Length: 261
Image (cartoon, rainbow, N blue to C red; front, side):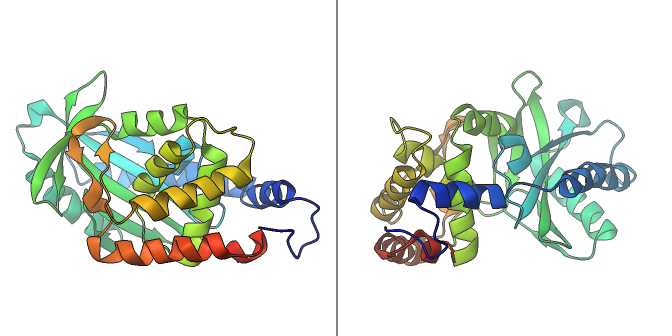
């Protein structure tokens, strides 16, 4: 890919400028802090007294975009609650629907849409391991209970220190409407960029696109927090060919400006 139309002298400068444009505004950070209390308080009023809350997502992983803010809220029930994962999934669903209008069930919980390009996923779980935060989650897609740790998943992503390339790839996914799950995207990027210089944004993007193009259709990907969980289903089989085509189109773009337009 060559020089871009914005007359920035090198590809790296353009990509760094693009990253800077996605830095959260101080007001956005303040709003996120305020949102936490606005979420926890109404939910607590409708749930068991002994539930605990964990706030994570892209903010925790340092992969948040100004264009699209998201927040994960895991609501933990203790094992002593004597409830199963389906029960807490349904119980949380009722609480969410009573508190917010724009909601939708998702694989592990419920999505709540807010204004200003912000959404949150509220996820119920039964805490099994207090130290590692392993818990049982009801998976609505599989109609089954899975055991994993969302907190450990996020720690693993952050540990890899690939936030810059993940942000850029998330921006491409957002602007080009690529139907790929964010967690799967992050794991594929980390695998694609093994051994690459973290400061070489151009090479990391190309390597990530090539890796996705090659591996998205015969997708095999496991949960790093629990390798017994095959998470390939997070990318719908009937959408994988479309993702492959979008990565090919991206690799054929002449400028970085067009890639992210």
